[in-house]
Length: 304
Figure 1 (tube, rainbow, N blue to C red):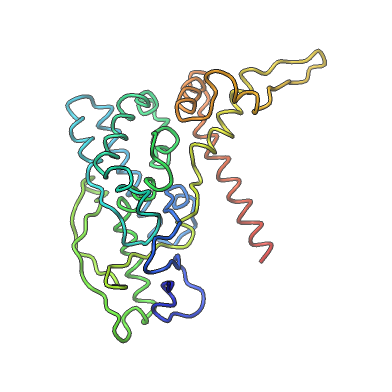
Figure 2 (cartoon, rainbow, N blue to C red; figure 1 turned 30 degrees about the vertical axis):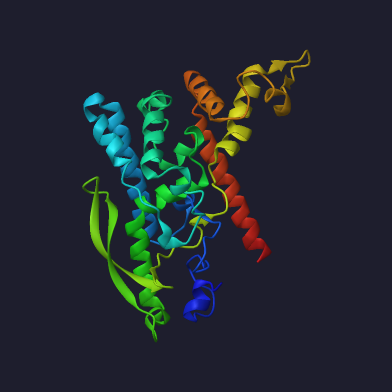
């Protein structure tokens, strides 16, 4: 199956994810990767603005009380399968989980129930925080949500690529105008606009900048659990030896303890407990993720 560059006859390195045209590709748009990316600009900044204003609006509806709950839940009901990117796997996305409306209900229920306390104190404030606490929200659903929320910046990036590479409109290749739903960060509402996209294999194609899509999420529930959550639990149970050395329970032993088994319930419970001790585990985790990504990028540059 041809990749985008093969399909259009583009040679050399390209600044977009070069996925196969006619198949789902096992890469997922990662909102935290976008946030930490160096570009391309202004598209990265626009995408972050979209994702931040969207969750801010949803969480404001949680904080402002029952009169705003209908609006908050409605904001989470406007997702459709983002097949334009050819990323992810359709059986794992919205359709594989019973539809976007059901996914929106999961998120809203969690925001107004389990994690409401984290929302109210401002610990949970970014789109990439959701997979850490909401059951069923993993790389596939996160990718689908993110793609729809940042659809307009992705479309603007695609337009820039079409302008940069004449192959997108050469020969029989065409660009057509489609009416698409987008998040409007100024109005803080879902909107509809006309967007010009290249057509590949009879379907519109949305290009994704390199570095914005990954095989796994930078901020996954499992990674959060293995690092920040268990590290905090270690400190909770640590004791000083007679020689003044801090003795910590091995993480493998902690996992067997009641209340510390792997899962989002543990993530939530320990995160709340840490906050009561004036420690923000999400901030700690994000610092860890950023440092690891920076080290990986440095190692990659050194190897090159």
